[in-house]
Length: 258
Ligand SMILES: C[S@@+](CC[C@H](N)C(=O)[O-])C[C@H]1O[C@@H](n2cnc3c(N)ncnc32)[C@H](O)[C@@H]1O
View 1 (cartoon, rainbow, N blue to C red):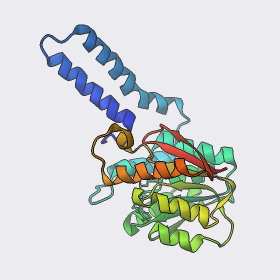
View 2 (cartoon, protein in one colour; view 1 turned 90 degrees about the horizontal axis):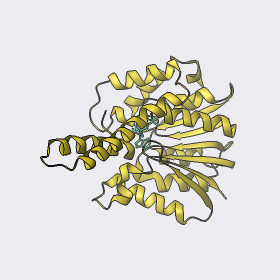
View 3 (cartoon, rainbow, N blue to C red; view 1 turned 90 degrees about the vertical axis):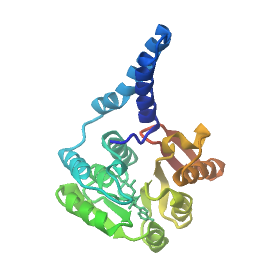
């Protein structure tokens, strides 16, 4: 799998550095030993996080395997799936906040939706927005293999339209997970806050807010890197909100109204 998080990029880079230093005649042995230590430190992190975190359910494991085995082409790829540790974090957050109604923007094959749904009470409900009809159909098929899948309703279409439709009507959401197109994040946040979609004390959780380090490395940014840099600045400047950025996978921001 292609590295998609700052920690994975650091681990890959250090592994490469060790090989290059090892091949370079006259390398300072202490520099090589330091590079090896740092490489071991970085490359072991992911596995250690997985082995120390509650295991994923058999249904989540099967969904992740089906996603990995699928032949992806075009704009969707297996790396989009959040995975074991992030999934268990979302499940933990669902239980800890006592969330009963959850909104997800960006379903993909359904991994994060199922991780959350497994943690919901029996009458809990998750509404998942997905633009791509094909992947939504694949997700439905995979989710239907799990008892918790029946708590998940899929809304196909642009998330902005679904948010507009949901806004103002019915009970607001206790937890909102934003993980769709990064260019839409600022508008999605505003639509959730301004559209009455967040329950009092509710939590918004936003994925990929470290965007592979693009906000701070000074290297040329991708379109997604620009979008996330702007999103983080907008959130930091909004005094209606309190937030914390966690370096979990590619970055996860938790936001609440003050
Ligand atoms: C990173 S993936 C979501 C991963 C998923 N949450 C998980 O953890 O497995 C992003 C998804 O957002 C969808 N998406 C992109 N733009 C969208 C939009 N405007 N409205 C709704 N979904 C969108 C993509 O088709 C893709 O399936």
